[in-house]
Image 1 (cartoon, helix red, strand yellow):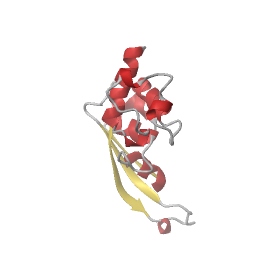
Image 2 (cartoon, helix red, strand yellow):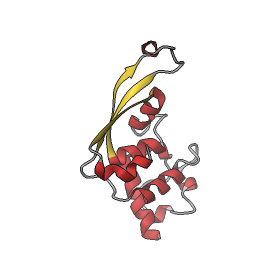
Image 3 (cartoon, helix red, strand yellow):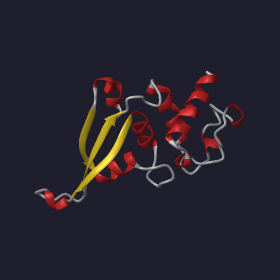
Length: 141
């Protein structure tokens, strides 16, 4: 999925059948337990939607996991143009989930360099907050 980001200018929309757990992570809202790196990156560039769950019984032989249909529509105005700096800051922020952003980002950004409250954990930030962090990070480089 991350590789598709490089081709998004040529993509209107896409539909995938994936493990339900993966789809749940992609469409997760901020603050949920499964919200993470893949949620932020995919939601920055695509409108994401879990279309429906495909029950295990639909397959023969029956797998141990459920599947779900994921719909991704490329945003006409993505929140950022270049995915690389966003990927970098999101990767660092989610590298240690139990730590605050202040601790995770201390090597690249401190509270005086951003308006985002770094006493929070990464899973509490919206996609727009991560874009702000990315912009603040880029100002330092």
